[in-house]
Length: 114
Image 1 (tube, rainbow, N blue to C red):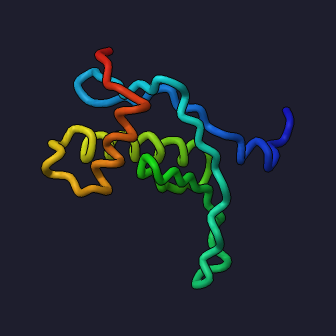
Image 2 (image 1 turned 180 degrees about the vertical axis):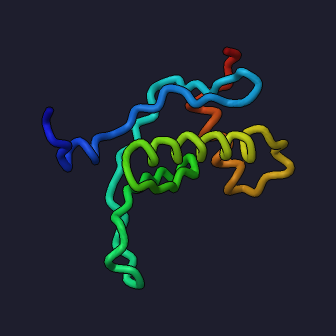
């Protein structure tokens, strides 16, 4: 078995879909490619664990995790919550910033049954 390298840890994720509620799924038209990076050290806690992060401002994705699996779970949760709180809302209830996020999601994804 080969050891996990830095390249493996920081390899991009391809997100094709995110399970939603009631048997529906958020499906991306093309894979959403997100590249993890290491979070900067917290100067107040320099000896704490290192965390991976993914930041993708266009879709309001800003998450972190201790490993790739945790990070991917956080990405899925963040996409689900953004869809629920921005995309499903009436435009009149959104700020200009959150309306832009909604439009960005609608340009790259849709909800499908099953």
